[in-house]
Length: 306
Image (cartoon, rainbow, N blue to C red; front, top):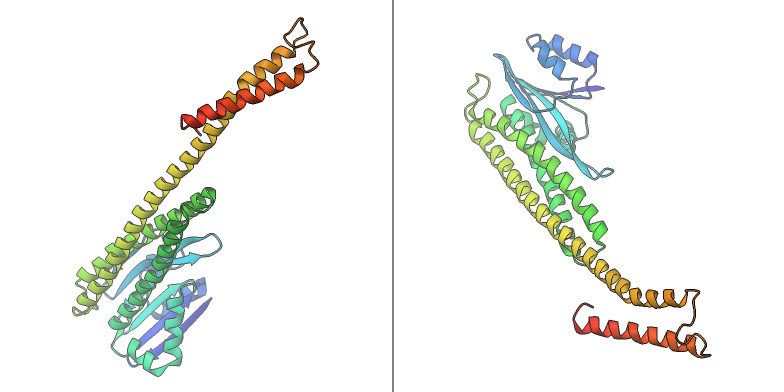
């Protein structure tokens, strides 16, 4: 869709958004040593992140979270990065804000361009990954806010709505957990990698990125435990309310049973029946039924069943 380049000093950053076959072919002509399988990966979605090492370059695939407000779910967005001597190539779909913001700042601001590209391709490679990893934390804060709202409303709001909210947040936590956990082995591999084009002093920097991912992993694991506990609480509340309803219905059924029996007896076409000929029989029978119902309600109240 679009291939953009920024060159500063000895470093060139090529950013490709939604690559077409022509974009990939142009990249293959410019860097003839990139393996065809890596070029093929640029246009096909990869389910899990990976890192490939070649003598002349590093090729890594990373996934980063992106919040989808329509489905209320965090989805993974793939970023492919090729880093060689004097260049960095990034390939993505253009939906990740840190990538767009980093490109625009570097394009429009001389100081930002110097910070990103002035210290070599290794530094550019690190900064891009660092910005993408840092973008994970605001999404985790959104999850924390959603969980806090559920905690505040769980005893007051409609239990059906609470269960729906818990299910949505739980699904989001599972998606985030999958995304974050898959990045850790890649960053750990970069931290340990002994490659000719990767400077040794970057080990501490990638260690710092790994620490951020460990923190994100701990946060999302804690969120998973909290939302599981909230789900159990919601289930308990729902069961309690169902039991309350069943108790009331049972009491009503027990009260109606003798009244139904009396009305059924007096509905039979037989004679003689007590009070059948009495002009006040209907009032007397109804009064007896009302007294019986009140007595049973008083008894249930006395036993603590109501």
